[in-house]
Image 1 (cartoon, rainbow, N blue to C red):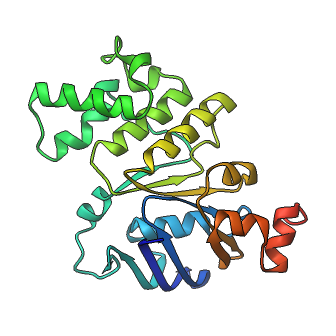
Image 2: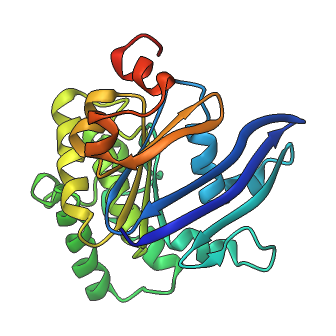
Length: 251
């Protein structure tokens, strides 16, 4: 598998406490990589490192390398705004902006100088279709984004993330607040999107990981315990900790 993201010797400290310990991993291009592990193992912290969200927390200190397309994004000269344009971020709970459905999706495009009405109308429709939401909202685009159901809000936020034309989609427990039907809608969309995007999905739901993953990274207590193609990982785990986690002995 061709690597899209390579992480080398990554450590993260918060107020002097080490949260991530010597992380080394490869994330393949145009695949769904699931970062799996129990709550509190460092999955979300690793996601923040990938998106440089660590920059906004003065108590966080990071060292090591995160290479995206062979460029170290932790170099101080890197343009963080351009970096985040490469990554669409989907959080645990949807965060609709206080504006219409249309303007929620168009927000990133407008910031990037795309303001022609016809262009925005065409692209908003395109991204809402990509998120499997267009048919549900096409007659109510002027309604507030907050008027949508939680599942619809999450798909709208996915459309908003796709609208900045990222290479990578970071999804941090994206279905944790959703009902089962909405969760399956998001999962189905990820499977379709991986043809054009590299998807990194954080979850602690084992069944979801088994349904979606092409590649698995298993974390425990701030360390990467095991990683590899999903079929190999689930069929023949190599460490006792992984075996215990998959059997439900630890969670």
